Image 1 (cartoon, rainbow, N blue to C red):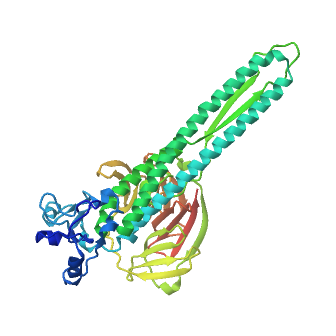
Image 2 (spheres, rainbow, N blue to C red; image 1 turned 60 degrees about the horizontal axis):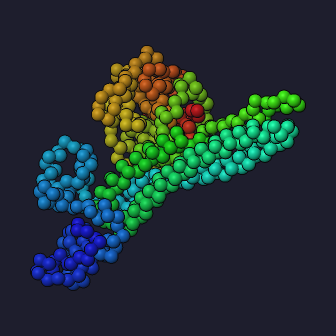
Image 3 (cartoon, rainbow, N blue to C red; image 1 turned 90 degrees about the vertical axis):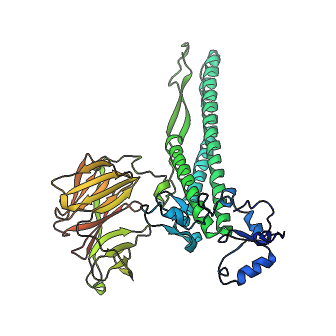
Length: 487
C-alpha cells in the first residue's frame, strides 16, 4: 500500500490516464477509489463485499501499519496466507515452499480480528504494563516524598542531640549533616533516574495502546493481523524490561540517624552519631498478565524448594448425575474459579462447573480423540514438558527439540497429567502409582506430595491455577474431582 500520508489519486482512473482524487481505499484490492469508482466498486458482484477505508482515516494509522505490503515482492502476487512457522505472509507461489510449516492462516478469510483472543490478550497485557508502570511511579514518588520527610526528621534528631552536648561538637554535627545530605542527594538522584526511566516506558506503552486503538478503528483485518505480530514482540520485550526493573531496581530507601546513647560532660566524642541507610525491596503487588509471554511474576524467577510446598484439601465433589457417564481426560480452572473438564467418552464434550461443583453449562463439541500411547503435554517458559506413561518417564525439551532433562522414579508409575506452578515446579499425576509427584524446575529433585490410593483411582488429569494457587486432580475412571490448595 502506498503511503497514506500523501494525497492519493484514484487507481482505476490512473489506468485510464485520468487524475481524480481518491476518497477511499480498498485493502483487499489494494487500490484507491474516487467517488465514481467507489460506487461501481460497491455495486460489482466481485467487490461489493469488500470493506473500504476512507483516505482521511488512513492518516490515523501508525506508519508501520500503513507501510505493510499486501503483495509478494518476489512473485508480485497478493499475500494469501500467513506461515505460522516463519511468521510471515506468503503468496500462493511461496506456499509451495512452505508445505512443511504447518497449517496456514487464510488472510482473505480473516474475520473478527479486532475482537480476537490475540488482540484481547494484547490489550490486556498493555493495560497490565500501564498499571504496573503507574504503580511503580506512585511507589517511587511516595518514597521520594517520604525520603524528604525522613531527611527532615533526621535533621531534627541531630539538632536535639546537639543541644544536649557542648558547642565543640559543631564540627561533628556539620560532618554528619553533610553525610546525611550527600546520602539524600545520591539516593534522590537514583530514584529520579528510575522515575524517568519508568516514565519513558509508560510513554512508550501509552503510544502502543494508542496505536492499538487506532488500528482497531481504522485498519483492515489483514493490517490488524499482521501488525499485531510486531506489536506482540515489542510488548514482550517491554514486559521483560519492566520485570527486570521491578525485580532489580525498585528498592525502598530509608534514611535513619542513630544518636549516641550517652554524652558525658568533658568527653569529646569521635562521632556525633551513626548515619545508616536501609535499602529493602519495595512492597508492590504486580498486576497479573494473562499472556505468559509478558508476565511480571516470572516463573522460576523466585525459586521455591519443593520441600516448602504444602497441600491442603479444599473441596471434593462428584459430577452431577444428569451428565450421565463421563470420562474426564483433562481439567483446568478459569481465573473466575470455574472448572473446565474435557469428557473423552462417547459424548465428547466440555463440562463447565461452578467453583462448588454445581453444573454451570454443558457444551457439546468435537474433541480430538487422544491416541492410546500419546503423551500428556504442557508448556511453560519456552519449554515443552511431556509424560510418557508407557515408559514411566517425564521429559523436558526446549523449543528446538533438544532434551533438557528427563525424569524417572520408581515411585511414579504411568505419569499422565502435567501442571506447572509459578516457580517452574512440575506437578505430575501417576495413574498406576496413584499419587502426585512434584519435580524441581531442573529435573534433579522430586517429592511425592499426595497419595491418592484411598480417594481416587488412576489420577490422569491435573491442573494448577497460579492465580488461586489451586491444584485440581481428576480421573478418567471416576466422577470424583479433588481440589487442593498448593502454597
